[in-house]
Image 1 (cartoon, rainbow, N blue to C red):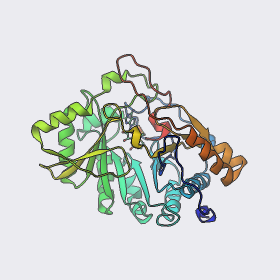
Image 2 (cartoon, rainbow, N blue to C red; image 1 turned 120 degrees about the vertical axis):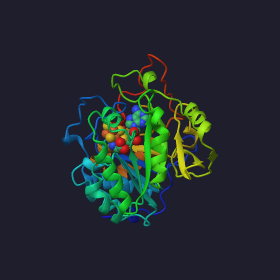
Image 3 (tube, rainbow, N blue to C red; image 1 turned 90 degrees about the vertical axis):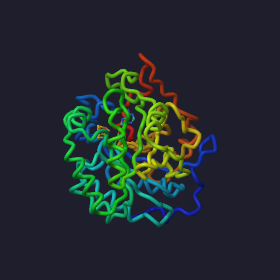
Image 4 (tube, rainbow, N blue to C red; image 1 turned 180 degrees about the horizontal axis):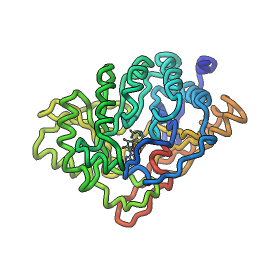
Length: 339
Ligand code: SAM
Ligand code: SF4
């Protein structure tokens, strides 16, 4: 049942700094079929399945956010497409697009399951997919994902393209690992008609690496690109943190997501919900509220009341630190919070 129609004229979600929260990122699982070296440990301890919210509970929580003015929902994880029956959730949420205020449903995926799901995703109303791909070199890809197969991801991307889904390739820039080859990746992606966003590595999770070893400044990378390409700033804003340029030589769009060198917190419009119902107001901070308790004990109205409390706790900004020896900003890794 779509509960958003039961609620009329609920006030929008506005935090203590006047930022309107219109974007929900929902991690549907912390599990994944890859083990990217910047994201999680080689042997992560995944949450017991018994702690997860059901797909029906996740749908009700999404309805609570939509009723309070959320217009965009992104499903992420872990790898969202490895959760059993996740397509049911996607189809249910897709049915809400254009009704009750939801404008867009998106997905971030590593693409391994897209040959199986691409058509149903497109039919469910998805228009845009973010696909993570850090290298086009099979050996580098395998090293960075700890055993992933490049062909599987490329097949997934091709399957999504065939359905007409718009694709953005996300690549985390990693010092000495893929940074030198990013121009090749961008060339290929633009040739395929895909946008690209580069991401600065964030110190999320105690995953046993010193982030200063991995970190590459996108400011520096941009300067290097400008030696070979003409980059024209674009006003495009897709509601996310990417600052876009057009690469004149390829004709494609390139985004820079620079949480370290270009803090974008002033324009933050999002919150993140984990698969266990913890609502984090900031990727880089620990403050959270427990929506699982609220939905199980008090239902939709209890969740709605807790959202107001959550707004009062959204911090002004993160304070990521990737200097040598710095501790991770938060102990939970990206797959737990939802990237
Ligand atoms: N499994 C899906 C995928 O890889 O697209 C969705 C979840 S993944 C956690 C979402 C995004 O977070 C990916 O683009 C990934 O590269 C990025 N990511 C993971 N850990 C990160 C970190 N420590 N710093 C920056 N980006 C990270
Ligand atoms: Fe899995 Fe995505 Fe994390 Fe890679 S970045 S390990 S694909 S959740």
